[in-house]
Image 1 (cartoon, one colour):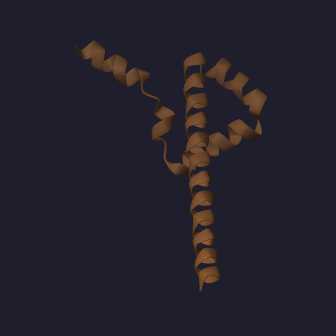
Image 2 (spheres, rainbow, N blue to C red):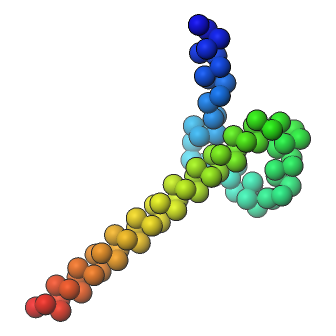
Length: 89
């Protein structure tokens, strides 16, 4: 039973639970030094940790893209409503 719990904790991505500033630093360095950062992580941290970092970066990029899309849509709808209301009256 304890091995099952240990395996679940081992497979959990530790980079998804980093606070904002630590993950911002890690992601900035990974993106800025892109090809070399992957080689560095694969060589020094191993392929499993490199996979976790890449998955966390993709997760963060998806959340950022969805936030930008929702912001643009809400602004477009708000501006469209304002223009419609002022043109109707």
